Image (cartoon, rainbow, N blue to C red; front, side, top):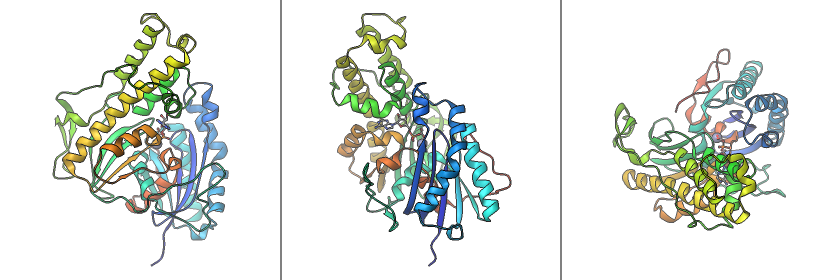
Length: 381
Ligand code: KG4
Ligand code: ZN
């Protein structure tokens, strides 16, 4: 059987990434250039800076991915690109690059939904013979076997918090999602209040290790009678506008405000105290306790919903994917309560990368027209 090699391209936010993946599972190369350092000074991603940075590095990033994979253009069978969701200026660079390459090199083009692709980092189970699993900085740890369907996936990133039940590569049901902030966004905003460096997820994760998670008790959002898209026990039946199971919806904006009010109170001020002054008013010990207590509530919220969905739908595999899946506490707590095998991508493949894009493209084969594909910043799953 002949193999299928896909070149994946990802530019939805601040990472410019390219990867070569064979048959959706064998990683030949994965290159990620992040403009995160350029955004740190602003405490968040600046869309214009991200777009300009993609433009500057996309060509060398793709060339490096091809070189590392020891792959020539004649060995590439298709090009896959993130169509959305994401920042319009960022998506545009990836989509236009992929379209141009597809036309110039006469390759089929596949359009991929970034959120749908996150769990596909777990379908990567092998590496090519040239791929270095271990470098001086890190070691890749890949799952030994691919996830099995039905697959329950918790997709948690800076832009998304979704619980999805996949029946197959093409058929899935959204069980619930965030009504406001994504959990990664809450991590980033709380970190900013505490004066911890951007991105906030790894900073909070680190600070929390020195703090007491029981120091403060923050409220957990609850939903009653949410109206919205709903699931049906028989897979794939999604009804719009029906009363939905509220256990699988999330909200993190109230938690973020609760952290702000507590931090203000801890410094002896009321709600009018500017959040920008909190980092200098709080001690390191207070920051660590707030980080640990916030993280306990955020992780508990996610893990409880995941456990409930596991009991209800009895999946064969559970995957946690997206940038927040890099969180050690989330991995630990989920592994503790779940009875289904839990798969979490290697940390390098949790955050945005192009390997997951190339993998999903192989399984989904969603063809796009290289002459007309447009980025879609609000693309839904
Ligand atoms: O998937 P990703 O790279 O980009 C999006 O699609 O959003 O996720 C980035 C998010 C950021 O909010 C970042 O703070 C969060 O993932 N993150 C973490 C950790 N590492 C990254 N959150 C919690 N703990 C971590 N260790
Ligand atoms: Zn992402």
